[in-house]
Image (tube, one colour):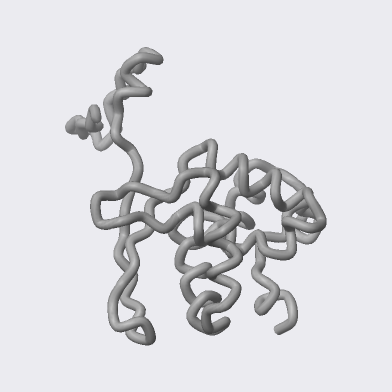
Length: 151
């Protein structure tokens, strides 16, 4: 990826304009490992791809799916050691399995996923303020997990 060069007066040089083919060739997915001592290991998460974010936001609009949207977000983010993710047809089953795990562990992991992807309340509020949007209480998406909404 092209880097900005600092000129002597402290201003940044203009970054190059990328073509569409250059954009799609860039590997921009980030990964992070999160220790989970309760499971005697760690998990790897990847930043959400745009299609995953769209799927999650669509699920938030469906009252039945919204109940487990926080688990769907986690399932969409978990990667194997080789950075592969669950197939789209495995997500629903994964959500069902994650429902049976310790709520405190899941809540901690979901919070990390949200921060990693800029979906935490602080990041969402900063984006709203930067864009001049309405107060965060007017947001159509409540991305908090059930544990967060009751505290």
